[in-house]
Length: 336
Image (cartoon, rainbow, N blue to C red; front, side, top):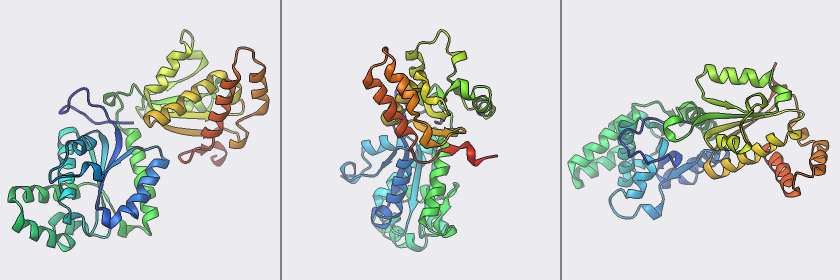
């Protein structure tokens, strides 16, 4: 996954979150935004949101600044009462500044408000700014107006264009997922965009080789795990490559479970998913998901004196978990 240039930020700063979400809690916190955050979590997309423990005081806290800075993308959910919160407006200013400093992606969502009203501080936003014009320093108010105009200049979504919240959320999450994969991984500390895990005897000369070529043509930096490329590499070196990848694609095939290398890598892949929010994409190549964990393969592993029973159990658990991951996942039997 991806990152934009961090030229204005210290070199030791690393991405901590995929998405920062700014919203007015009383409008959307228990509805649209809560469902959006749940959908992000199901895609293994890490998020940061405004929280009471870092919102005390009148100024934007340093902790919140860091959360915005350490997020790859920002989403602002404009709603009826968004402008009535000075805190939300200060968050927005920070996000717009981050766009200018680092090229961070900022995406607006218009929930129950007209984009032109947001841009020009009219309609639902008018009363709030009329109050600010009387009570606040004019320089800061001008900054808020400028941030609104800058944010609404960008590509975004309007809930009025969709049947319901669920349809819009699905499109937002897929957009963010694709954007994160498409961004360059080098400056974010990732050596590879994708780690490709598969059983070579099953798919090396067919699906996996074509997939690797397609990724290469899209300039997606991919590490292809293959017995032919494994000579001279220890397992520890391959596991390190997994940790250095933002996404892992696991190609499950008929004899996948018979490979101890594949299983050991799979355990590491799921560990990286838990510990560093790595995205894991299962692909089922000419095999039913329920048939990946073949009993005969594990009978062989159980009889292998070099393999500890605890490790075999970890392989079975990893297979069960990986084959039951939520979307995205693909089954070759659904395609021509």
